[in-house]
Length: 203
Length: 203
Ligand SMILES: [Zn+2]
Ligand SMILES: [Zn+2]
Image (cartoon, rainbow over all chains, first blue to last red):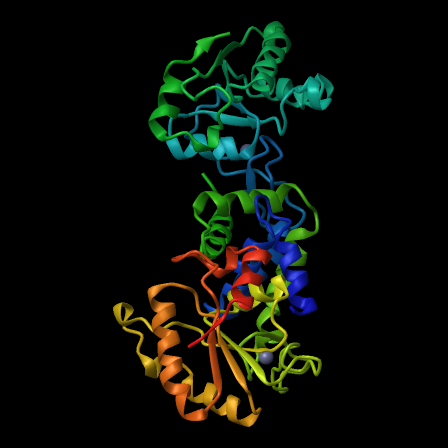
């Protein structure tokens, strides 16, 4: 017999990815018994989360915004030491963060948000190709690295990029499949990630 | 490259049990991109969590409190349909909730909070034995079921209860070890849990 408030907290936790009823309950009990201030601290952080963190308007990475009206530009897009002529296209922010952890990439990013997936009904028009093309031209990008995952959808997306970017005369490369087929970029170690970038092939 | 606010949120999430850096980051990205209202809802819930939920002053279960000054009494301790003569002693609230899910227990509970553990320096004086004895006498408990886990520390705690409760003349039983040795009550299925209660042995 558990209180209605506990149930509410548990069901909110259980909406996080990979969190079931038991894990959610474990979090709740920990917050109730273990660390005095953690629940309130985490709570305050989450209440304001989406007012302070938003997708970067240029690349889709997480960006911190100062005032509610300001445009979100992430730390990578505003870093002048980044090579503006090199643009790495990824499926998700998770992948961008994984590549950043490995430290193999000196350029900037573009997050597609999703992959081309005929099976799931995701077509070319569902991807932000227009925004990608506009950015390449506006920032005079010379090389685009396609770092979509080595899966069926990832390869399909790479081929779509090849077709769409052809008229621009930009060099398009694809990260080497050091990452195992069907694998997830997020769990690749820095060496695998480094090899994948070093061995990239021209598409 | 991730913002300082993201880092703070990630490090707070990573203080939850079993949550590492990558899981914490996954939660953050989900909250930033997937469900508009979830971050704020969960945040509001957590900010006030410990003002509304506290350990029951009688048994240690989670109790909802109405006003900040009221004493926390859980739904089980205040349920008149529960058999007051039967008291089940458990190590943790997790175990109480697991037993409740299985529905084998018609009495009330007493949460020790920890187990006797010579190796970890937990001695008899670290357990709330006085409070347990007082509750048994005050509520005229007839049978105490010891539902500590079937581990070395759980058995040691059961033997401590046997010694401490002997002068009271109360019936003390131990749940049958249907739960595998070294196992965790929390992951026992209802049938195993039911058998463990049905086959309880007098200590
Ligand atoms: Zn950006
Ligand atoms: Zn209680």
